[in-house]
Image: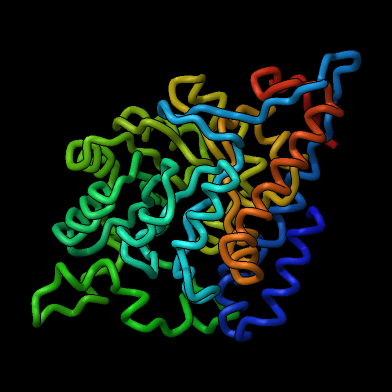
Length: 348
């Protein structure tokens, strides 16, 4: 982990209420997957290429027609106002200042319009399909109307994973966080929390439904198998995010670092493959890119940065990760991301 991320986490742990720290940090079950996530990236070693011109190193990428200064984006995470009063508005502003892609969660704790107003950069919207399908459609279209450029369908959450550290699935959440983008679509007699519960019957047909509803690309997040990725592509997915939900869903799920190559090989360049889970340094990102990822996302480091310094903390965390990536790319002999392939890494 690079220094600023450790400093942000230490400050967040010292200043936030213990229950919020535990909520953000916790994983499902015995937290085996959480503990394995960071160590998994360290199993890959770099095979540098000497005598290459790296006087200038370009970290930029293009995804679905939008250019970003860095391949390091912000994974969707819930309820940012628990970390900082400005919540997701500060997070998206910090991400934009760092040239990063931001993915806004269905469980955002500010109204979509307020979040979108805090940036001029492109952003994506993460979708939970809720028990009330009409409510889901309305919330999705609110995000589209606010300016979302793509949808990220989370596929690994038919039920929310149990987290022993918080004695359940999450800490108690006020309605003005949990239902802030939902209440306006509820009738007077409707139980909003029940209607907003994830639908465990969601299937592959949801991909085409979201595409037709929104007119946007749909990326499926929560894929850890090559055959699952192919099923999503056959159902119309425009991208895949290899992810185990930060270890917060199925404990002992395979670390993303170990699942990435299989998914990349099966997809064979048909759509972008991205990854999140345990990424804490430029070296981790370099490995992910060499294994075939088009982008890598971070979650908890953004929350700790937000808690430690608001928008500036988020910007500084993402900028430090990108600077670290630029440095190790130069040392490895890669002047830009397109030079990387599996020949640049080996396993311990």
